[in-house]
Length: 91
Image (cartoon, rainbow, N blue to C red):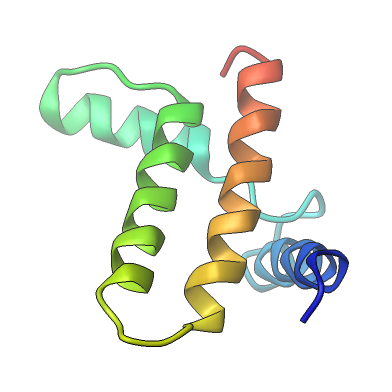
């Protein structure tokens, strides 16, 4: 699969998650997750940090397997895009 195909799959995954969870903008749960984390732990994190954490989960899963795991790779790319968007928006 080419890099362009991976990016297209990641884009579709974001759109699908938004549709699944009733968000017209696609997956954008980082701000809500950051707020919930802060409420539970009393520690503040940003939406960008939430997406970084999720990327790390996907990378840990990918590298714990002896072979390529498409779901982990595609989700990691999608989280990278969300992280960049959140950083740009200072979230």
